[in-house]
Amino acid sequence: MNDTVIEVKNLRKIFLSPSGEDLEILKNINFSLKAGHTCSIVGASGAGKTTFLHILGLLDSPTGGEILYFGSDVSLFSSDEKADFRNKNIGFVFQMHYLLPEFTALENAIMPLLIRGVSIKEAYTQALELFETVSLTHRLNHKPGQLSGGEQQRVALIRAFITKPKVILADEPTGNLDKKNAMIVTELFLKLNKIYNTSIILVTHNDELAGMMQEKYKIDDGVLMTI
Image (cartoon, rainbow, N blue to C red):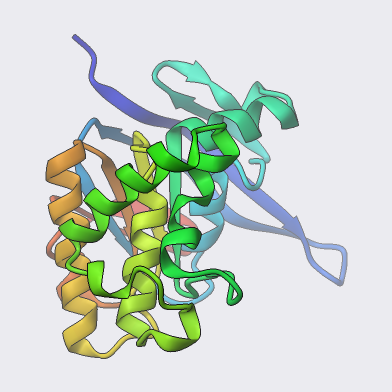
């Protein structure tokens, strides 16, 4: 049985520079990730890590190549099909938590479920389980401004996992945290990975955190390599 979740074939991304020259940001990248596996991607600023993650998350389109999820080339999907696929299969965690300041931690966490049409009662039940898992039940009714940076990012983590996506794409999720909180958040990623068998792609500048993933890659001058 093929348990590959993502497969990328000969992926290329070219931007047009202000001077009119082609800038090849990603060069013939080949990559795959199996169900439940974790990997990290490191590299210098501007190497193309975030561009690669945005393409995998269907937030940007490649110049060439294929992006296959479960064997289907999703780069051929329409905008509406991509949006629907993202909502059902992909969770995102960014360096900034992007929590809505006027809503409580619990309300922020359940929004992806409400968008799906899940009832508030059921959404609360699912969220409470995750709040317990990340030891944050004492912060359910606090608004983002009342939470520490580490707590805010844990709520963002709950929001990403609450739909039980097949894949989590995380772009520098610990970049704004101190070392202690960065480790807490990364360990929670791995804990939730085990519980839900979610594949995780983590972009980070932190070599220690990158080394906690099962597979480690580096993007250098647009080329993805195993390290």
